[in-house]
Image 1 (tube, protein in one colour):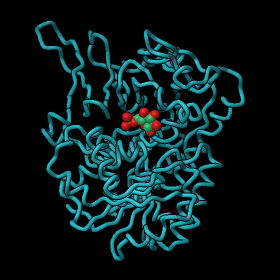
Image 2 (spheres, protein in one colour):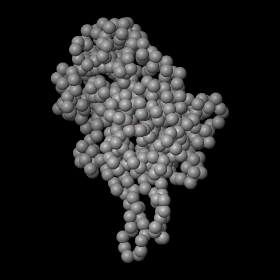
Image 3 (tube, rainbow, N blue to C red):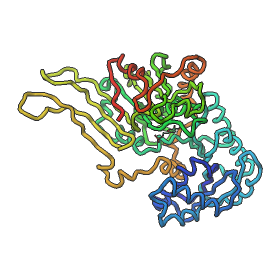
Length: 477
Ligand code: BG6
């Protein structure tokens, strides 16, 4: 379905995110026929260049980051939509020109793909030069603050010129098909929701493991670390979608209200329930300290923690979270591990195994429900655990393998004016309020993160976090 006619301005249009994700994502939506004839994309950045040079740059970006589409017959039509205005967020040049390019009566969106320190400058100039209308939308990226105080300050800065209904804070995890699917699985089936509570669930494990290190982006990462870079935002969103109460409707504020309640119900984390790690060198590959170009860094590239949600539904059900760089495999999954049946009627059951619902976010997206059946054969009643396995690729054919990138989905939602998959200001602040004490305890202490070897599942202490509760992490593979 086509979106409404729009003018989309991308500030930071020559930057890494724009070239890698935003522009290739827009191109795919264009190629899918989702953009009306008139829709325009206006690049803005400091580089002084003309429309033709910008189009060349975008052509090169698509060739580099979406190789399958570099020769697409749709490309010239997409490039025709593009134009460029040189603008320095802190300068005065270019704004009048930008204003002249905006068409009245169409959806206006402004993507702030720039450092957060420039958000205020952009918002103020858009207002002062009377460029953004009362229904204009602005899109901002993480990092949205580095603690509660800075997130609040950013919210206040944006609120000076834009209403909350105009602000789209991106967490790209919410744009992933498999993450949205969590809501469909929970709320479009009768099968899971009645069991989705402390009576039937033993614990939940969430793993977001990456094989890449931080080489090349050490300057950003070293100021951030896994807690800020991944846990406070992406993993927190996953926790919310698993733990929230059913919203009354799939409506932006109804969904976000329920997520906020989860974050507010999180208990503070005692130091014994959190492990941070930092990868060492391995083989020919440098360790974190070299990648971050900071020999004294105490920044964590890995976090594992045990989370408790203080409400009726989740009383006594720990959520174990872990994420890290340079781990054994790139794999993201959520495992909901059920309790044992209250009583076993079988004598010789072999190794009793509890049911698990594993939702694979990436790669090989799908769902796997582990159930116990009778091991076939004449040898009595022995049980064996087998998977009921669904892979998107197999179940949905080409539609399942060609899933839209998170950014494609999110940008079209901006044009449609649907904020459901964007974080509300209070949600971001609540997540920082939860993360802050942990981070500040690390920063004020002198302890170092636990070292771990690249290609493993992180420091042994992370395994200990589960073992001491008589539980086990699923293997990272
Ligand atoms: C980003 C983080 O937000 O998410 C990166 O800054 C991380 O450090 C990335 O690698 C992971 O995203 P994805 O989509 O590859 O799981």
